[in-house]
Every structure is written in structure tokens, then in C-alpha cells.
Image 1 (cartoon, helix red, strand yellow):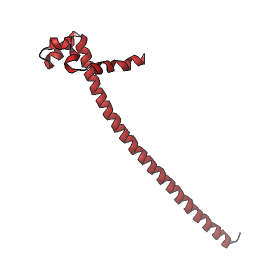
Image 2: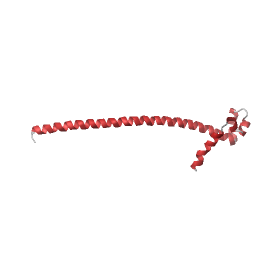
Image 3: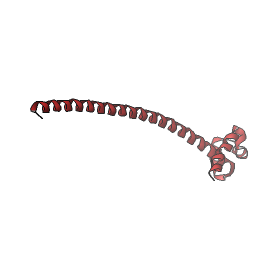
Length: 114
């Protein structure tokens, strides 16, 4: 190949390289954009799940205190602080609050695990 032909070839290669690099950069930018939006979706999902977890654990604490109120003598001190007539409360912990469904609901998940 002559000098002139070599230069032409070099120029063609350079032009091709520029096109390839710009395509590659565009692909990387697209990928980055996709990942950013996925990250945002996951963060939103994470927030929702944290909120649900907080609500659930708050409910579980409530259920557990009701469970304790049903049987263990140690919990009467806890109930005494909350309810002036704690003996009555111990006999009928659910009737005062109308909490039957919550108490029943708390037992179900454990039944399925066995």
C-alpha cells in the first residue's frame, strides 16, 4: 500500500473507532439510566416494606400483650397500670376491646409453619 492509501485507511479506522466509541458510550448511558430507574423502584419498594414491617411489628406487640394478658400472672402488673380493674381485664381481655379477630389472626401464621 502506498503512503496515501495508508493514510486513507487510517482515517477510515479513526472514523469507525469514533462511531464505535460513541455507540458504546450511548449504550453505557442507556444502561446507567435503566439502573437508576431500577434503583429508584427498589428504594420505593424498600420504603413500603419498611412501613409494612413497622405496622406489623406494632400489631404483633399488641397481640403478644393480649396473649400474655390471657394467661401469665407476671403480666397482671402491666395490665394493672393500664386498667384500673385489672382483675376484670384478665378474665375478659378481649371483650373490653372487641379484639377477637386480632387474637385469632395472630395464631394462624404459626399453624401453617408446622
